[in-house]
Image 1: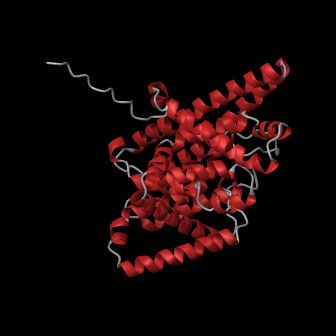
Image 2: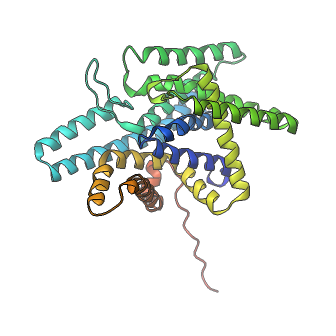
Image 3: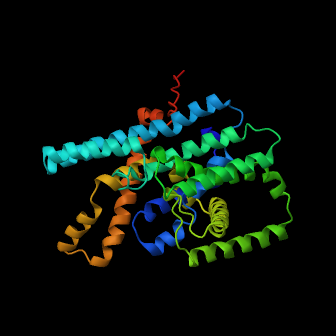
Length: 353
């Protein structure tokens, strides 16, 4: 599998994971761009590569290994580090409360905090792993329906509507509603996979016009962005924004292909980030909840750093930490096993004749 990776897909993942990190800075002018595609493109790619050769039981086991195990491991790390942080820098009582809150957050698996009908702390970006798990399972079960295109589409729409409609009533645990909405994007990715040969055979003129049209639709989506928070099943303007999202994902994929064809260093960096995007997401979620970037930046401002440099410090600091941790941890076979990466091949030693 490692040897058969598609470079421009990894580049697209790399771009998307950087945008997820930037999207958590809370800057609207950034969010209005990155939120139009950064999470959905992962759903599209997952749907595109959905394995229909495995039985449903085998498929579920595979998804538990690749999504749920990393989720559990990362939650344990957050609970441990957050508890130690409060125990060392505050007091024992605060550490116990932190342990309890993060444990409940990990079990509930909500991407955002909710206060009704009871308070539950957000687990953060890890909601994506749970939503992808549920969406993938739903899609795989739907694909078992043979010769029933209308039935498949109907079930996908029912799941999407259920997730979207029920979000204002009560947020269920394990981000299952987000998984219902994710099924739609996963299904679009699957449809793209089964129709890729027909798309490739289209005349160049049609492809060019389609690309220009998609770009204009995406730009309009960015310009008129209101909200598109899949963590809440918030689809903004509905069908219009879903179409804009599809166009945005297509343009980003096209840009990724161009980068892979015409650059070397940038493509290598983005390919690396894309290859380890799931691991990077878990590291990012950990540092996001443990490290007080704003407080660190404020202290540096006191010591003479220009205030306008604060955002640049945070971005560079986050990316440096995340990439460094990824490079180090990606060399560890225990971590690779937990995150279902291929083990590092040992170099063969040749004896001298």
